[in-house]
Length: 199
Image (cartoon, rainbow, N blue to C red; front, side):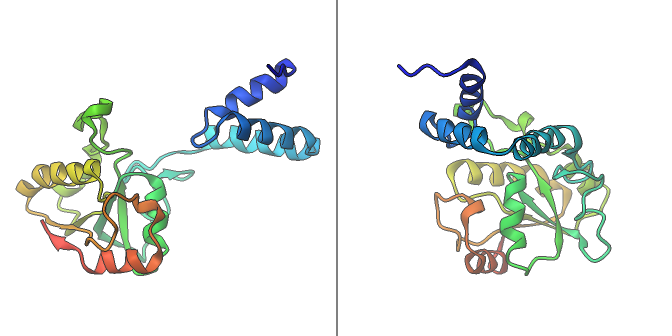
C-alpha cells in the first residue's frame, strides 16, 4: 500500500469526494497541484474559498449567483413572464446555449426520487408557487430531464400548479429518453423547446 505524506493523503481524500473522481484521478490531481507554482495552488484554493463565501441562491429563481436577484431575474430584456423550470443550475447553460430562449428560470435543485429519499419537500418550489400565485407568470416550461425522476417531477409540478391556471408546457421529446438535459446539444435543445407541449 502506498503511503503518502499526511497533507498529500488529505488532499487526495478530499479530491476523491468530487463526483467522477476516483482514487487514481485524485492522486493525479493532487500531484499536479503539488507540481504547480505556489501562486497557482493559492489561486485554486482562493477560488474554492470565494465560491463558498460569495455564491448564494437567487431569492427569485434559486439559481446560483453572486448578486441577488441573479442576472436573469434582473434583466430588463428577458421575458419575466416566461419561466423555464429546470432541475439544477447546470441545466440553465444547456438552455442558454440554444440562444433561442429569452425567458427566465426556476431551479428546483433536484428531482423527486423516493428511492433516494427525495420527496416534494426537498424541491425548491415555494418561491415558484409564490410567483405564479402573484400572477407574475404566463407560462411555465417544465424542462426536467426525460428520466423516470424527471418525468415524476414534471407530473408532480403539473398537478401542483394546474389549479393556479397558469399555462404549463413540457419540453418536447427531442431530448433522448434517459439522458440528462445538461449534455444535450444546441440543436436538440432548440427543437425540444420549440416542440414543447401542453400538460
